[in-house]
Length: 124
Image (cartoon, rainbow, N blue to C red; front, side):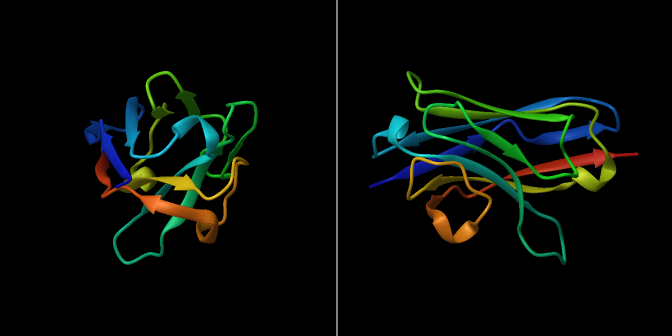
């Protein structure tokens, strides 16, 4: 059974930083691309960042480019999302997801497994 468990969310002020973690069990983590997505109240889930199986390729949504960094530690079966200079519009539930493929992707349809999400709230 594949499980993804996110951690690291919380309440911060604008301009602060947070690091989210997502640990995967039940599949060979290093074979698959990973992604972070988020969903704000009343909005659809949106792409945030993605990383290929090796960590060699990353892509970001324009809204977070230059502020967020995705990385992975295949020895620890964990993917991270470092969020800096956070803004109130970053407030959302953040989900990690494990892809069907090794490549990075912004397409939710390419992801087989999802975590339950972690709440991030940024106050102004």
